[in-house]
Amino acid sequence: MKISLAKPVSIKDIARMAGVTHSTVSRALRNSPLVNRETVERIQRIALESGYRTSAAARSLVTRRSDTIGVVVTNIADPFVAGVVGGIEEAADEHGLSVFLANSNAEPEREVRVARKFEERRVDGIIVTASRVGAQYVPLLEHMQVPIVLLNNQHPSQFAHSVMIANVQASLDATRHLIALGHRRIAYLGDRYGYQSDTERLSGYRQALEEGGLPFDQQLVAHGDGKPEGAETAIAELLALLQPPTAVFCYNDMSALGAMRQIRNHGLRIPTDISIVGFDDLYISQYLNPPLTTIRQPMRQMGRMAMETLLKIFAGAESGNDIKVPGELIVRQSTAPPKES
Image (cartoon, rainbow, N blue to C red; front, side):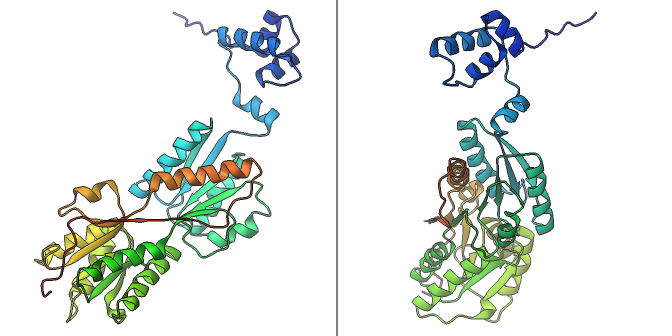
């Protein structure tokens, strides 16, 4: 049995039904002011009733826009990335734009390669999360005719369009919380691949110690890889010190997750023996045992802001050099005063 597929309705078909030229139909479907309003409405009604579908490829030839956005992420499995991409897609959909997604695997060379591929596909704009390239986009822009927004840029730069968390202030708040509880030996568990974000979070930690009259001790700084496995090794080093910390501020919630597991493996209790603070406020953080005190990054909002920054660029508006989004300290049950206080 043969299946009959109806031939798609073309602009010429609509022109014949409406009794106008095909160029008039093209203009009417674009709401061109060169066609009177009554004719535009009649043609659009005929197109709708006949099941006409605009060809994205044909439309892009006319508008020189593809209505697509390329998004480069470090790892789609990262819960933080998922939250950010959700915000990007939400804002893009509201403006009739589609999103292409690609992993960079946190490799700078791959990140640049993916961005160039997106340009070749004629996307209208590119958003890069946790960029490992950063400053190199400035000279790249001379050759790439596509606007780029960096979200939580991981490399120091003066890039024109970026959205990122206010790391220093957020880390100040996290460390101040531990100091206010009475902790005096507070460790920082960072990410050795973090670049700018790690540097800024360490800076906020150090500022809070200085503000609280506490000495900075390099022995209380350890670096994992931003994942639970790396954090387990890093926290083990801190716990092996002659005077181990009574509290630990972690680079992100994934590091806190690994740290909590290793602390329990050492027979210690959270927060009775040691307090833990994370960073991100991933969905799982509230369901950990105990629920994790952390810095909330407004992931979905940041994704929306990156998309909205691109839309402003499309409209010809100037974008701020560096949009800083404040974090929020969320206090849960993983922090408490130290035993000796």
